[in-house]
Image (cartoon, rainbow, N blue to C red):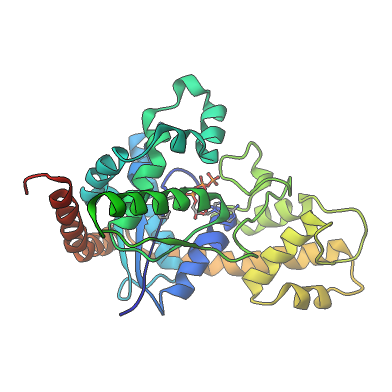
Length: 327
Ligand code: ATP
Ligand code: LTN
């Protein structure tokens, strides 16, 4: 039996190369070996205000990104979270075994509610990690390929699965996060001490997956570098280390190979080449996205929902019986 992986992305903004390298690139590699389920998590997206038409457009856009990146719908199931109502139902049940301080310590909640001011943050934003735990454990997921910022949420999913099993008997598989050191935390181009983020104030923080060639050249040219002039991969040169990581992940070379490639060359030579490597990756990717029709993508997601629905129903029924609901 193949191991199961599950992951998802919110349709809540423009994706950037950090999302691609931290999550999607790994999914594409893992789909060969694992029984893979990938979700567009629209119910997570509405934990912050969304304009309905934009949410609809972005939901389809995320699915197109999965497909253009190489997720194969014949091997994997791709679906929209809100199409499987069992996620919300299991989320509710898991709420009842979650302790408030466990949610209060979540750094993503602290960051996001601080940004929007605590008073206006929704109860959904606070509860977000419980729904994420439900997404994961509903499918007996063993591995969850994500970026570093999501590890704390997966820790909670583990805690809740263990707590449920302990209280009601073996029901859930205990999931594990899957991350890669070089890609788990792609840093901002304008500030290598903070992760690349779509909610960053400046667009010079990230390369969006829909940036055109000129924008990529401009952003890479402006990216901060460290003192010195040699292209070296070192802890004390965080800006350069981040740029080398991006180069190596997109060009399928090790950081050491990239270092060698630019031995004796200047930062500016490296940056010019890096911009071209990014453009070479983005151009065919964007072309594929442009070729996918909304209808085709929606049909693929409906198909994905059909494949996973029986799994979700079966697991939820087991849960309901165990907690004493009449099913
Ligand atoms: P953002 O901060 O950009 O709004 P997010 O983490 O809130 O992103 P998503 O867009 O849903 O939300 O993230 C999708 C996936 O991309 C997750 O697995 C996340 O861990 C990963 N990811 C996000 N930013 C980075 C990054 N800078 N480096 C590596 N992985 C990342
Ligand atoms: N919180 C995640 C998105 C997400 C997810 C999941 C990831 C929702 N449910 C289940 C993995 C598994 C984020 O990236 N912001």
